[in-house]
Image (cartoon, rainbow, N blue to C red):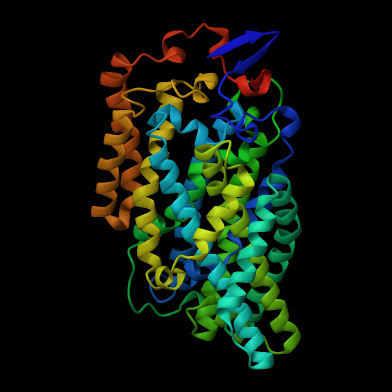
Length: 475
């Protein structure tokens, strides 16, 4: 139940809601466009992106690889901005908003899928970092213990992430500029071993389909695309801004610049590194190219910073929010991060790495349908309007026993199509899910399960920016 008094909405559901997942207020919005750019440069500077660049060597020409990265990440950026508007407009996190399209209990499905993806990525990135530390320590001392280094790196990342958005912002703003400079230096060292002619005309041994490469790049940020609202809810916004581009100024500039440029620069580290050294493993490529002990330590710093900046923002933050929402109030954000990190330490990242170009489009098959459903629900069905109060109540967005059949049918069908046509999973699953969800909602679910924000369009309570304009207190 809820009540209104002096522009303050109260929800009698203290057993269901933790204050950390309530809509953000203006005072909580601490990120500018340059913070978003540093966030993306920090997330893109990672061993996974280095490996992605290296995986294109011998399969695509240099120009094809760069074009595939650019097209894929510009496409991903557009999706990121569109999804991010949910956080900008309403101050909601992913785990709360997803109840609108999937239903109160049905939302557990996309939440768990997103959490598992992030946890797997956490394991992969931490393993890369531990491998680098192990190689360097072994080089200087002869001591090798990758399990120990894996554990230490994981604990450090869990502690930083558990501090929340302020800790993440600080880590990204410190590490991203250093990573950019260091990686440009590493690229210079690689290029010094090659001629530009060899780079531009590197022989192709096993041709890869160009659009499959685009799909891989689109799929790379499928995890973050879903929960980008966890970050944009902290982005600054002009008060009562009704125009999309004005409202999303900081998000738009930050993401359109940060994601594509970051991916190109850091993929080049892996791509040119593989050409120069012959190593497909980016850790070995970087360390083998450095001529002396000081530069080897610099390379190690690059790798460790890359893993920290990526894992804390992209791979632990979302699962922490999700477990916070599912287990609130017993599981707060910090506990959610700790649980996610511990599970991530128990994954088998060395196996996932061996099947990297299969792993990414598989992620796309399972995650891109969620993106399509979110876009369709927010823009086409609800016209950006949300009954924010109902999102926090067990009886709100209940549909059929807490599940929206339109979302479940759409998700299953779209995921199957993506798995059947894996090389084009993202390109097929997202538009199919967007259209199918819209058709099912308009012709079936909305007629059977009325939605207040759709039928009562003039109700002030259902206007946009509820999270920004009004207080919501839990009693």
